[in-house]
Length: 122
Image (cartoon, rainbow, N blue to C red; front, side, top):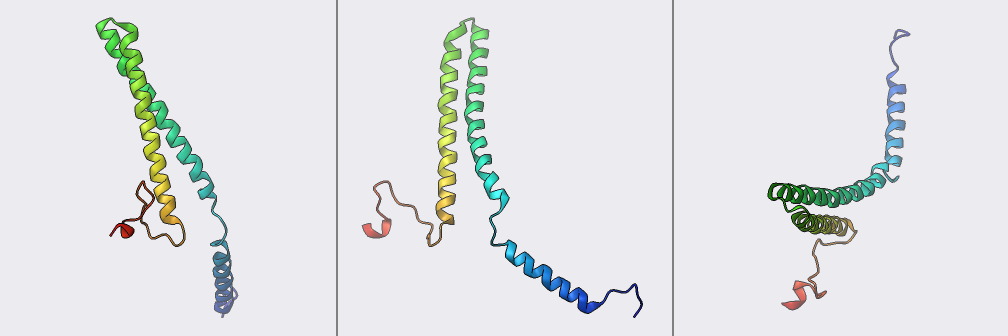
């Protein structure tokens, strides 16, 4: 064997150490999980602000076209706010559903609003 050729036994030992270290890191919390909560929060803020902005632009455009400045501006800004809040609630519900499915022992079933399962009603 030449001096430049790698030793296969040492390479196998090194690969075993690498595999052992990778196994230990799987139990550690991921940094991405921490940032995912911030990403969800920014998504919800963006939905609210975009709803307000779109409502404002539509209302201003209608008022500018008709010459009735504050009426449609206020109405569509409020409608945009309502749409933004509804989008935020929908996103929060999606996140809640995803978190419920990730819980250990969860069977993926949702409770009805009264708090009883469909199985009890049968």
